[in-house]
Length: 148
Image (cartoon, rainbow, N blue to C red; front, side):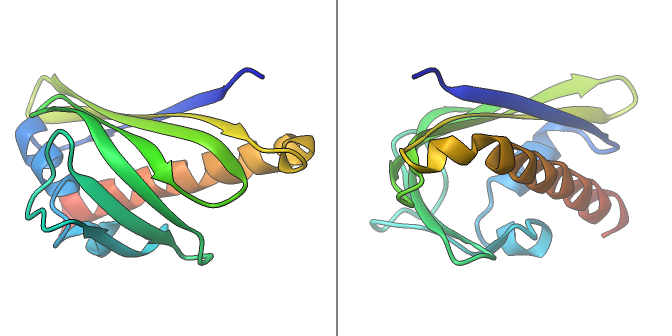
């Protein structure tokens, strides 16, 4: 079965490095990421980095453990699911930060996932919910970074 992929982007009026660092600071994560009700690095990690694992719980109660498979400050991070809700057989996410003129940053979230049977029969319902959540996360990030 092929993975389902989608991406969403937004322009934030802050410098690239500042946006990157803010999004990867787990002490700040819940101040902007309204999709989550819990977010923490695990196994003694103090900061996000290649190979570091995180545990995040969505507002709907579903939790996912991820591992950083890419961490190139200040341009890209990528994580893969190592443990997660039954509905996903795989989940990958990358966040790309592109510096623009006038201290602006284009932030792109790209997600790729596969749903397990029988949830995959309802993929037409799952995809729009995930897209809506990602769009809102980006809007919330922009609002927090630009307005404090």
